[in-house]
Length: 114
Length: 115
Image (tube, rainbow over all chains, first blue to last red; front, side):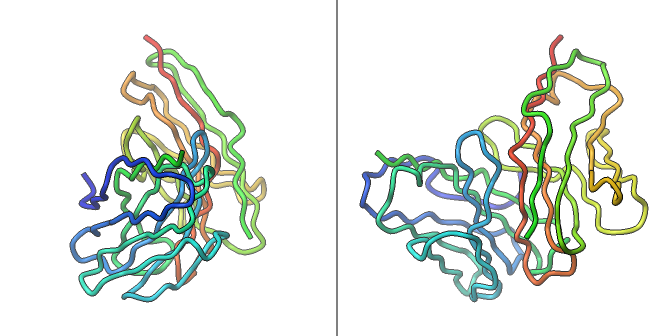
């Protein structure tokens, strides 16, 4: 167990809807990042938050947005869902924002868009 | 920008045999290198990482990897595998000294250990 918890574990949404995924970081970690893992693919970096501010973003459209709260928990919001958004969404946390630090992944949220 | 190529999508081996999972990367800047393992229906777990220093890195569960800068490779090895090593393995890179992780992953190698 990594101490990173995600909810919900599975959900089904309809195309065009909006979804919110939640992540609770490991205790003492102030940095959280989100990844999308499509079936049969490696995870792709969506964005990273450090002390409530976004400090890095991958090649995802603006309808993917996030928040980090004062307790360092985080949300990933996706608007106007598309079928290709069906994937495992992984949250990861670390003690700070620098590359090279070990990051700890949660078990993910499976999103199916129909 | 960085990219990672895992040369084998699937590697079947017999229990107690040695295994090598191959990873090549491309980057215009210095990078850190990682191997992660993903068991079915679970998140990713770090096996080992290379930041600097000795090019031979030892990780958990008896795995090791060797960084080869001239060949831009970071192959993962284990001298004797167990059934429990059956999982998906991902190689990843991130820019060294960066202010965010932005791990770039390969597509993964499914290691299947047969009795």
